[in-house]
Image (cartoon, rainbow, N blue to C red; front, side):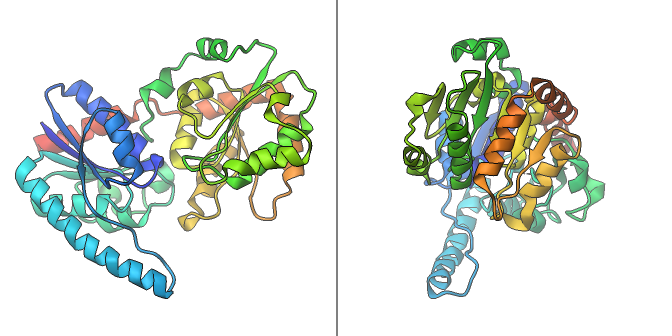
Length: 373
């Protein structure tokens, strides 16, 4: 069985694709799996690290706004779209896949489109409550559409071929052991572990919130912090602490630019402070974690806010809006919540109600049926 998977742009598209690929390989041990993406994109690094074959194409997204710079960029994008189409045609002819599945990002566009033109069975998976542009463009062409929840079932216009499967979460996250993870960080039962991060690149807003949390938590020995600053605002967190005559050495914490052991960090945590990307929501549900969600206001259709509502509406999360945010007030509410162990436990149990632990296998069963058809 030959499978092509297209995913790119952000970890929110790539990680569920990798989880599906691992499930597919487990059930089809003789299969050949090839990922398609940008050589200079995050997908190249993550896919190669997971030891899958990678086929690069030269493609870029379009920029909005009629500035001279954007117009020139978009002209190059059109040129690259032509090149990527040729690359995808060559891949279909040479590799002759039995199945092609797109997991979002503009990378998926030409790959899935050309596969459908060749008559190859195709499917797409949309992680968010509001579908992205690529999913909307491909929905008519593909044989199956997979969505994360019931809210997304009718939004792509083809409910008869749309199936709710949840979001694939890595087995590493799903099965991580809490006791072992807490022992790794030297945590006792009395310590409340607060995990905070802003996605693959980071978030200056979350950095400022957490700098205020640290400041207000000075002297408390019942808290342990795991915080990732991200790449885009590496100094913002530290500089805010310095203004308050503090440093990370004053706290029981681990602060890093990026979290490489997210499975252990989630398992060890009691409260998570983060954005509300679709995969993050799914990981919070699978691991049963209480959370304070700060949706990014810079995403299409404000979809992170609607993602966050899925947890907030069942009492599993608190939503804090970024617009006109009072960092100090938010920090106070976070620390108050962190002190209420009973509420944290209840919120975590509520999150579990949205958990889908076999999403990758559901997708596998459906696409294998497509190939047999």
